[in-house]
Amino acid sequence: MTTVYILDDCEAMLEVFHEILTGLKYKVKCFSSHCDLLKALNEKTSDLVIMDMNLGAGVNGISVLKDIQSSNPKQRVALMSGNPDKLCEVKVKELGGITYINKGLFCSGIKPVISRCLGSDTFFSSL
Image (cartoon, rainbow, N blue to C red; front, side):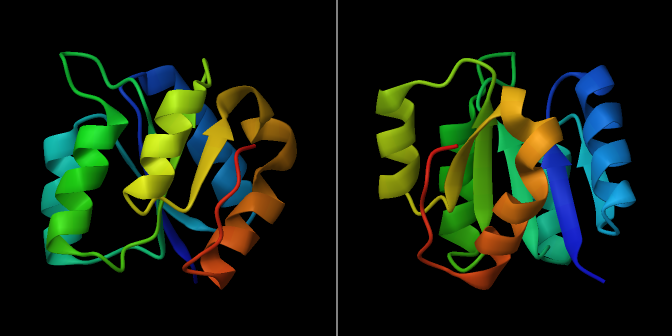
């Protein structure tokens, strides 16, 4: 079974993402702390990590992406935002992120995005 880790600082969003992804038959583990996510990835990688850009407390998805890429450059990571930003999208691509997802589209169109992310190490698209 495909494992997807989700990182978001909003518990309500994590519940929504968990419900959607388990309904699509993915094994899902949710994290509200980037430290907990990094610890889990050190113990066992995931098929895909999807994380929010704005994680509160001065932490953002780009800094967490850098941390992930430094310890596991092959880890597939997709970032999402409720307020997509072209500069952030470019930075995510430069750092090896798989895609940049518009959070507003998560509910309606995430299954094909995950399929494409899992199928290629080089896929990049903003959605």
